[in-house]
Image (cartoon, rainbow over all chains, first blue to last red; front, side, top):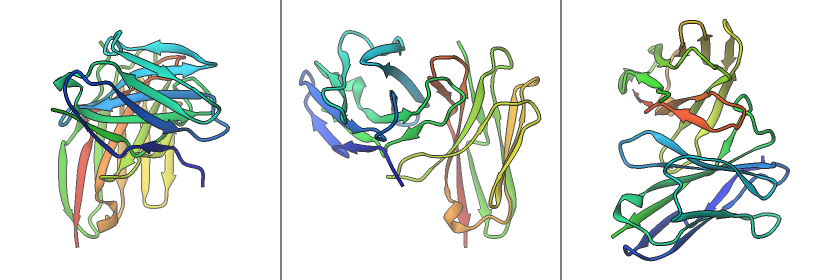
Amino acid sequence: EPEVTQTPSHQVTQMGQEVILRCVPISNHLYFYWYRQILGQKVEFLVSFYNNEISEKSEIFDDQFSVERPDGSNFTLKIRSTKLEDSAMYFCASSSFGTGSYEQYFGPGTRLTVT
Amino acid sequence: ILNVEQSPQSLHVQEGDSTNFTCSFPSSNFYALHWYRWETAKSPEALFVMTLNGDEKKKGRISATLNTKEGYSYLYIKGSQPEDSATYLCAFGGGSQGNLIFGKGTKLSVKP
């Protein structure tokens, strides 16, 4: 069964460093998402991406964040200068359609720890 | 700000017990309600996507109902098994852009 994969599973970085989190969505999906969950809090939407453009972004997704689909398979989230409060589990998801009524398939997440 | 609430926060049951939990969401601008099952270190697994008021969906021993007019959904597990232990997340799909708004989840522990 096709699945969304994410690497690395755990990333530790120092404050101020840049990190890139990688995702391989399901191959025939066209809509891609990043969410995050800070420990003890709700899963929060960060950004959606379609046709090589950001479709929607939350207020969390400021200038420190960027997304890219560098080739036909990978989808990346970059945090330019990490802060302590960026420590969270980051989930990638993909979907065949872009509305809220279609199933989104999630990866297992990357746990980012900023020290 | 759209808010999705789940209760209870956690639940401990014995194997064989049936259980249910609640998801409350805004009743306006409703698109869909998603239920996910999330085991630690694994991907959240989609259980149901519900779109119609009065919808009832079933997957094995797990079922869900939806009331969009009053803004709630129930998830039922019949005859809980230890492998049902997980966090159950609901998410409100409120727009045409697809972003989901999650509740905090209900953590279910089933003791053998």
